[in-house]
Image (spheres, rainbow, N blue to C red):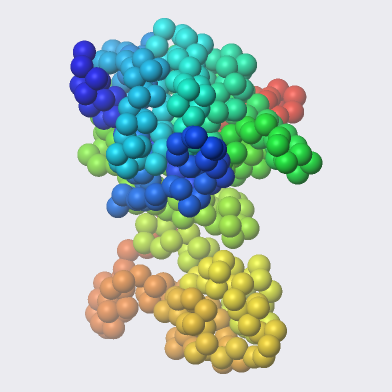
Length: 447
């Protein structure tokens, strides 16, 4: 098979893996080398849905021994198959880089023959790039679950970022839709990589020339909508991964109906809005000091269709508002819709020099059309309406305020009463077995 044909097949097969990002590495060029993985050396280009497209993103092979129900590359699918050699991938990467088409490589793979066999091929590929071609650009490598960890550990010395994809948010769904996969095989390397990253960071503090290990951290992917778990369960999993596995990012991938199977949901389109809400909530977990239990619970297990998670939380907790801009601490300012991390810091810094007026806030980056309902400034409230959930909601949702002006308009649909039937529809990661890889063979992900 011609190399161009392989590239066409395997680049197309890689598009369903979203767990990649080209930022975060500080790998610099070396004398006589090529490429640069430092921040300034990576060209960030983003697709409309937020995915980074600056990498050569391919599968090493789409030959797979597994028959996962939701996967386009499942063993039972009749589709064109191909496999690169390590030398072919290395040559492609260098040639694309020299032509300024890419700034790095994202290399994933289906499992061919055995996990160890596949991981050995991936390791050989990036070793050629680093040692023979002296390529110092960004490399994101997919670790193969079930492979011997010694292979993964060696790969971690060459890769900038690694990912081990969980894919499904419960043990029950994994057993049903991906029966060939084992949860322990997924979590064990994730835990080991996380520990090795922590060790590397500690050694780097002590020794300037500490051996590198996955300097840009590790990530994972969760498929949203292929199984019945609600947003609350997915967010709890992400929270646990951040706290216990030293993860840099959790990526959420809206389920794309590429296969027909009675075990899969009958959907026409990927749930992109749901994916978007999960990304917004994930941002709140990582940068705004929210907890998953604050954003959702078992009585309200799914995000509001019409409001972002932060605004929805604020409306459900109006007892904390309005907050006085000149007195509220930094953590409380972060909870105000329309105030971000940068604008909150600017407010805290500026008010040391004197009182801040309402009209100063826009200069700090505050989105006043949202924030004004939740703040006072110098003791004055600028919301223009009573502090009531229904009234504020009508102003935050485009078009709702016009509907409220009519005396005879029908009562607007209450989107906050989301379907609770999914809460108990799927067992979470392991029931009473998930925390086995952190402590003593007990639950990792709370029900």
